[in-house]
Length: 156
Image (cartoon, rainbow, N blue to C red; front, top):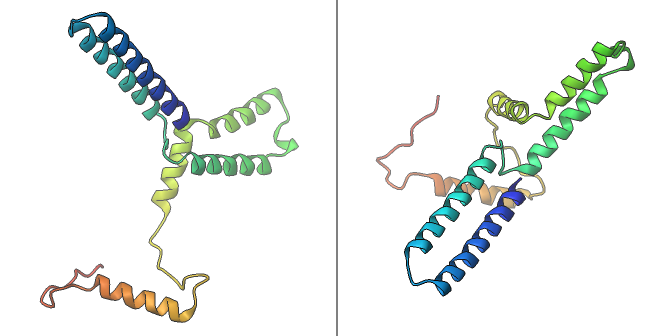
């Protein structure tokens, strides 16, 4: 979706530039040029509004991975015994389809965020002990208050 949005914006901008070039070369009036510019700005804003309505447009890889995980989980849980009639088959297909709907994807991701808790940093992986100690010491120095009379607030 991000690629389509970018492509549409680029095409609209290119056509806008070409139209402005033609109008500028063929007329001396500024009015057609300003109307043309406003119309193309409007079309670009409409394009952006349409594509901004899709959830999580900034992390398509993460969304794709989560949907893939949900689909795999569904396929691993359903058995032939679960599909014993046309109505149960319809229900299984409907449930699987629901996994792929944008609002369902957004709900799953937001629920995952809401259910998460704070993470305490552990020992960095792949880092030697002296290097980890030096990094921790550097962090303590950089996060210490510069004025000794000011204390950092304590979290409860």
